[in-house]
Image (cartoon, rainbow, N blue to C red; front, side, top):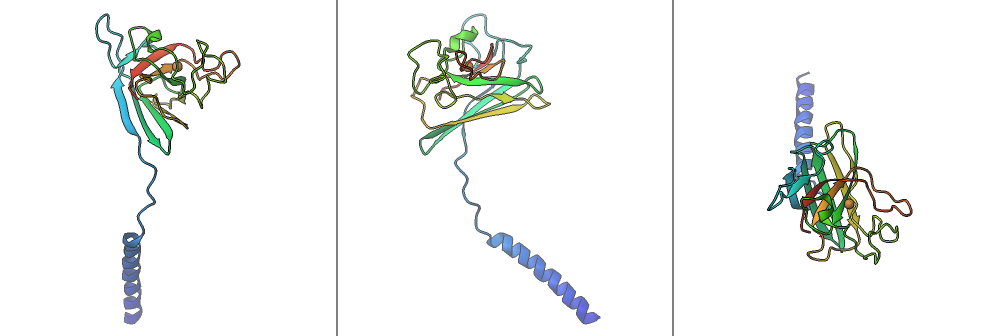
Length: 196
Ligand SMILES: [Cu+2]
């Protein structure tokens, strides 16, 4: 009896020591791809009546309330660009569209200009699916959860031309791929100035 207790106790010790040892000795986890770097983050406000505009603007406080948070981060790896949009404080369980646009946010929704395109459509506005697509533009569409939070991510096989991508717009609908309407996503509800 005494022996078996000792043996049992011994094996528990052995197992404990062994599993601890295994964890310590385990090889370091394979490095995951580099994390994204924050580009811009803010809580949205109404447009200013004059002068400098806030970094984040809501043009429709019913669909994107004042104080809702927009954050965008990006990284470049192996010639590919990844952009991540993280939102909170929006309407719950709602589909929104989102893209990177060319100009900074202004007092009016149209001020942020057209979508950033890797290969520029000679025709404006660009609704030709040859140019207005998720490989040639950055589409960050998302659906919010029951708390109004959400995330949109895009990875493309190119890098931004410096100074030409300056905002992320959140739209009222998911982005269309329909012929003649490609790239459209309804009203511009909010804007985050983000220099990529
Ligand atoms: Cu857009």
